[in-house]
Image (tube, rainbow, N blue to C red):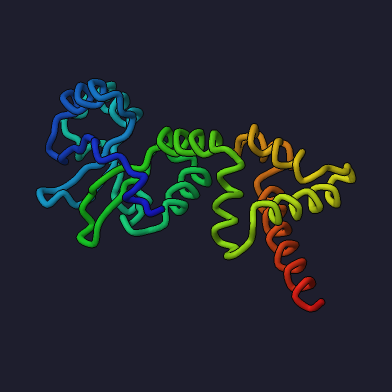
Length: 211
């Protein structure tokens, strides 16, 4: 996924000559805590937050140019950057919003923390079975029965609790991605398990071919 697929295209932008009072009204109307400041070509030249607005009103500043941060202080992502870059910027720097720009440095969208949370929430609701179906498609020629059998073996080896292929299949049909992450002890362990399953399937096929 690219940043442009995650970004919100419905955003408010300000000009440096806009009044602080009118900007506060615009941001309140759309319920936004941050806004990019752009020039006539929609290129990013600065950044304003609700805190800047509040301080500006208190100190009697009139123009956005008096309270905005420089664009040099703003982290951006290019529209074709991986979406994970925006996610990492948001997480590591506690940003509420990251502007998305094109080749001409024009602001074309915003990646918001709330959008990331919504995306992750949707991912967490994905059924684990669908992930295994996708895995089966990648392992050309592998049957569902082979995949479940290998998964049961890996699970037994990892947990020390014996489980049949049928029981394993029943478990993933009823489980979501989020539940599986918690059950396996984290995202890395979950995907490490999937990789082990794939390796197990391939190894068993190679073993049978040699006989």
